[in-house]
Image (cartoon, rainbow, N blue to C red; front, side):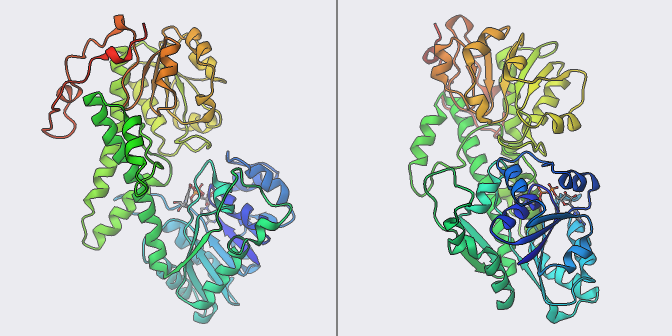
Length: 492
Ligand code: NAD
């Protein structure tokens, strides 16, 4: 099938390359001239594992690039809209990019085409897109608008697209539904996986994707509800980790206990400095706005966001607890992107935390395997230096902070890190490292919801005060117990 994908961002570029991979002829369109030229000249403008290989494989053959939307749409049977839907002033999704694509392609629809919404959008968007097309002269029988939400995750986007757990097709007519079924057929009937030149799944096992056909409205809701649920799991475990800190319990033990329940599972139960990125924050506020418009006050979502924001504050308090004052301190920082595996710094908690540290007078030397140049665009200060390695960031620092869950950070040589640091202190906002290992290396180690690792002579001077009594977080709640003494976490 000939498919135009509009928007060559984190979603469109991956979707376009993967659709070419499963056998379609794809025109990837973007109106950002710099991005378009980069793609044409053979570059991959984002950091995403396996994506450069796929682009090289299909560029100029089944995959071409264009900056002429109407022309690309005219040449195709289906048009996928994958442009941004950023938050507008009251948290609702800004759909102006989607609308402008609909207006621009209208003149190209002179035979039956399916317009497919892949951007994350509120309920009714498919109806609105159809209305805009009809208002701009498209004959009613020549177009169907389908919602086909995208569930890929940055960092594992190519694998997620080619080996999906489900494909949701929200179509209001059987004809449109059959076009979408045809697009995804190689993944659903498994014929793609029989091909010799297929992209290999990095794990040993996978299951064929479940195809879920719904109305457009249900599909639009599925995406928002999925993201809200995942964000809720993260905030839930972060709230539990907070309680662990208060009472001296260990979130790893608690997580094992609750995650072993098959109804709950372990996934998305990793405590840390909270979620970020271009999806969860904006999708939660947009979902909340959708509910508000329906007259329903979805307060659970507010609480999820509130807990998430508190995590950054809680981490900063941990840094202060470990280092006392921040003014004049030199901190090594690992991580800028909102999660490992991507260069995306949109709404990254790491960025917010670094900005707060600098604002409190610290100087920061930060290393990220992929996000330094995007980081420079959003964080510029003469008190922020960008390092080329973990070890350069650590050298001479008063402490090392871990803010992103890159595997490279997990597997670094921490005995070398300890020797390079001015003081052997690590504050881990992602619980990437093992407290036992840190204890064995005589590193003072602070993480989220797990007992501190510190030598006896470095006992916490504030240990007799509870964190809650210093700064109440949950209203009038007072813990039943004082935090356990640090005797369980002796280095010496
Ligand atoms: P992005 O900002 O990386 O990419 C959007 C692209 O669209 C940009 O390159 C922009 O130049 C281009 N564009 C905008 N208007 C255009 C027009 N009129 N013609 C041609 N190109 C145009 O955004 P993204 O992260 O890829 O997200 C796109 C959508 O997918 C959003 O709705 C997002 O919520 C959703 N989504 C994102 C992810 C993710 O992990 N990033 C996952 C699932 C869904």
